[in-house]
Image 1 (cartoon, rainbow, N blue to C red):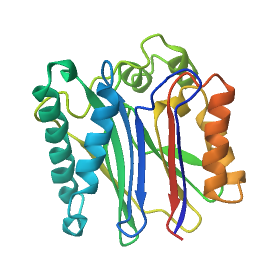
Image 2: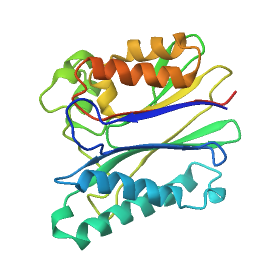
Image 3: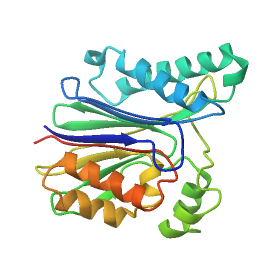
Length: 235
């Protein structure tokens, strides 16, 4: 398995509220982007990832099996927020990939993203952003470029931990030889176009260099947000 990953605070923020995680043995890959005042975002993303990592992933064989660990992570963040008044309203995006045989199961909440990048350098987004501008793009009211500049681009319509129960987007993809699955937070795609992302992955000699190049480019363009990239290929 080929893997590349990096999480960076960026050039403006003082705290990294993103969390990136991978475990080749578990075949588990996660990105989470926390939100909340003070240190709430940092706590939300780490709480969610800790809950997910602590799950018994031997129980996950199908897409339906993916619902329970994400529901438990949602409860963990929700309960942590209710326990302390200063953490009320905190939440996090979660986009995860679980490898089962040659399939990749995707679970998604928020506006972090999963992409499939083919061995030819072509790519497609596997997730829908749960955000105001994400819906406007799907409705044909905004282009991708417009969305990256929109003043409300960071307003989420759904996040993990903000409600006691939630519906999760689930999907399956079967990567071919040389294909790459990329998980990333909006700190990357707000400033780097998808065409640039696909080209960098395709042109880099390995996925760690690709991850480094993507984060470095986002920082060169201002690094206004935390940036997290987790990429892997099954071959």
